[in-house]
Length: 262
Ligand code: ADP
Ligand code: MG
Image (tube, rainbow, N blue to C red; front, side, top):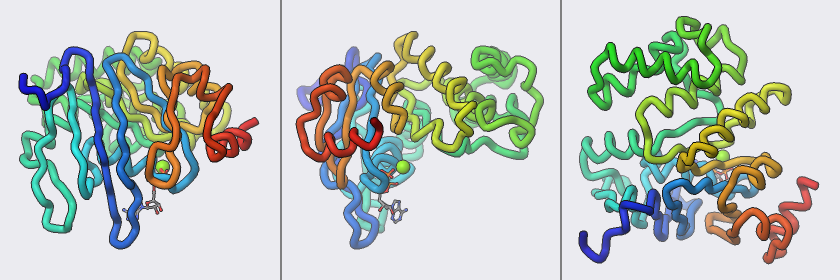
């Protein structure tokens, strides 16, 4: 391993100086963020501070304008995308990124015209080349794990938001990702359904899954995170272990932001 590469045995994600513009608007202004294996990094911050864009830059759903990214100790190779931003250098690179960093979205994003089990096997079979029979077995096991044992053949529209989000989490697990990226996974849910989804996320944390979690659930962030990061205006304004971060915020901006949740 060369000196410029990270330590793949402990480091999961290392993002350095990530910039992202949309036209004249610079949304990310040099974000530095790392996660070691087993870390649960909670990202908080006001609306429009760049949290979603940052997650989307990590797996290149959005193309960063500049910056560098190491996943599992390996540098992500980029090439100019022709629009002033950076695209992954190859299809193989994209495939690897998407299976290493599995995303769970606010609005579940399940394929509506497919059953839950069909949703489960899509990426393993078509992206990773897992044999169909094996993908089905694993898909069933993961749906059972998130409490959807009687819903394998149901279509998403017939499920509650909490059930759909649990299925989306199971689907993210189906590619056996290095890390999971959650973008406000409970924000679209009715209040009475939030708990069942947080419980699943908590169980993943308990088993040592690496996660980056954008959330407005401050109590949950305090309980589950190993580190909390505050985004403001496209940069990391402050970060720390939850005990210090919440009880002794340093910057005035973070103090003010946290006061909204008391
Ligand atoms: P957050 O998740 O913290 O609320 P976002 O990352 O979604 O913030 O958005 C940050 C800023 O980037 C916002 O001003 C938003 O309007 C802008 N933005 C996000 N995506 C796009 C896009 N595809 N095109 C143009 N502007 C965008
Ligand atoms: Mg967002």
